[in-house]
Length: 395
Ligand code: ADP
Ligand code: MG
Figure 1 (cartoon, rainbow, N blue to C red):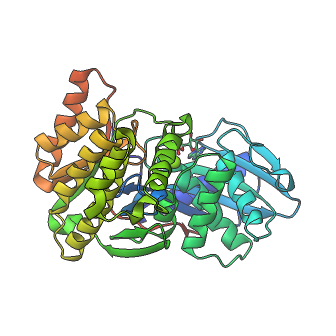
Figure 2 (tube, rainbow, N blue to C red; figure 1 turned 30 degrees about the vertical axis):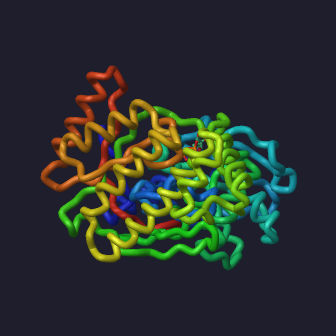
Figure 3 (cartoon, rainbow, N blue to C red; figure 1 turned 90 degrees about the vertical axis):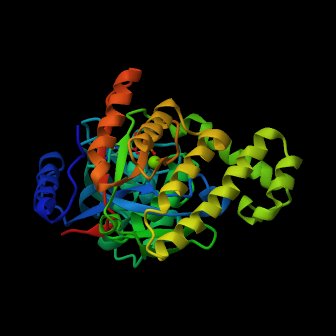
């Protein structure tokens, strides 16, 4: 079972044609344009974005495509190939948090968030088709939000830059869909560049793209979708976020970002054990981002391997967001020759990334597949990814 199709030069015409056709069949007429926004994997810097820390994501080739047309009657009509088979019809002036409880909360939330943020916008017909697996830790929700924000930006001539698009998308997910996520996913989907990773500072919301071309170094970045569906709405994510905020409060800090590594041992000793281990993850993870950035800037992509594995150990032992399936994928990949591997995204399932020498890709794929079969787990989805462009107009 291999990857969903990418949107590279070969498939681009097909993808555009197919969402135009889908739009005509589900909503009628011809769209004003077609947009794409990608999913992401985070190389390192997990569960740091809501502590005002650092992350290092890349956009992946798998994207969510949107054929859209503006409407002047205030209606918002939404249809998704991955939705419930029905067209959702909403009135833009009636949108408010809690009013939409289906998948449509993500795109409708963006329209609401634009109006909330001082960008008066009206209705639209929106037809989606996504190649980002949903609920797999690859940020299909951010792709869905960012593609709407990008389309509205053009249709309503809002003049938003990529960071503005990300922040509106995050606001939609937080306040309208009710998921208390940080900004990393939306920043990756909105601001990424092909062939580069995004060094993200979530305090200043600056995103500096740095070179990341594993293939030039003879390496491949594999994604292992464990098929274990996480549900970030189930309270676990919110509990972690509250734990970090409580720990920062105990330590007299605005955010855990402000704890210097030299003070970490004292800080951990002064906190209840459950908060201390959260703090240890966040502080060491921020340091791993800086380490990874230095490695990539010096062209040492292979050096990233041990940093990935150390990040996984920290999520497994301290932050405790891994699960047996992600741990098994990491261990099997490394045993079969990956230079390093880690879960990526919120956790509790989802996906693992592995940095693999070209000659070991088949062995790693085989080893992970076999390990899952032996453990009685569902077959994982394993596919390579390359750093890809962020949200953009295709037509
Ligand atoms: P992730 O972002 O890791 O994929 P989330 O739980 O944050 O996982 O978001 C997944 C949810 O986003 C899905 O359950 C669905 O409601 C919504 N979603 C994402 N992409 C689409 C799509 N193309 N069509 C309909 N709903 C989608
Ligand atoms: Mg998500």
